[in-house]
Length: 239
Image (cartoon, rainbow, N blue to C red; front, side, top):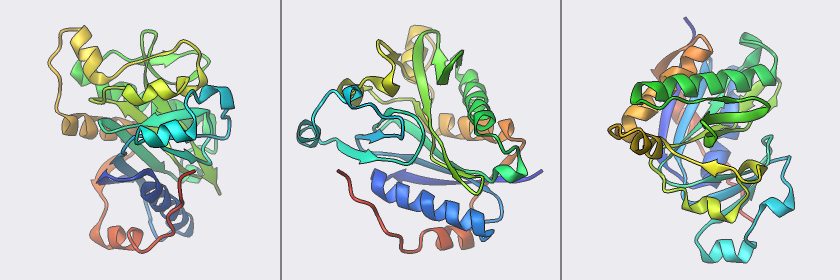
């Protein structure tokens, strides 16, 4: 079975993680990283704007965001507006789709399936919402997904709300969907009167779920490849 290397970056500013995933994609394209890769990270509060961003979906000015301690970035991923904050599991997937299926819509559906499988052991019954990308618990959005690809190698990925308080979402129309209600694994556990899991347990389960959706097995990124990945990179600036 092919591998999905995983590497936990901890809490990292969005700009630094973006630079790392771009480097990872370049290394995957060149073959220097020989297996698919999942970078796991949490971000300080940040709003990112995808290629489908519509200005009226940003409800606060850049000045108000800065005053609130929220960064603002443009990203090359698909989709509209997305929020990251501590307590999310953000997973950046660097997959060579030439080894899977050269179809970005298929990629999105597999990521959804992996997240759905990953949260099920914690009593969260998630599902797709027909016509909308992401993972839902009834009519509440649990995870957002966006992707960019070059030479059929992906980067960007998913943001699963786990223990975050969802406060940063007040600055946006989440994912550009009017009236959407955001939720988290913890909120869904509380709603179902289930015990809240440890964040690290959700990280492992979701990584395994996503790997399984692509027919892969998780393994920690080898040290030699970690050192190659973490070499100096150019970090982009926020707006």
